[in-house]
Image (cartoon, rainbow, N blue to C red):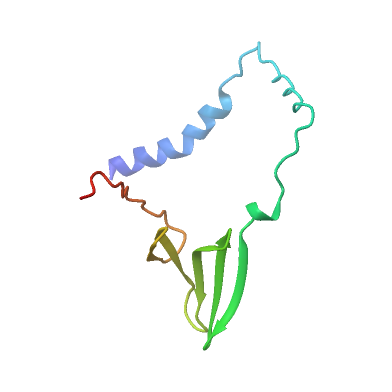
Length: 115
């Protein structure tokens, strides 16, 4: 029980220590960034934005995300339940299911030797 009181005390008073800390007196503003080079145009072509095609398959709503004609992700929304994603693992195929916003694990699949 004593440890719980110490933990609560620390959690309540640590933010007060941060507020009480003084800022150094010699702080300076950041300099302005340099201007862009002459003639620079950011790439805003439609090829860099993903194309999204929405289809109905049965009762499910399917959204296909593609860039340069290659589908890389599919979002499936059933009429009941939560949506899930099918993400392409390799260029040749190999879809994997992703349920939710969790981080995707990318396993290296380098070709070392071919016979």
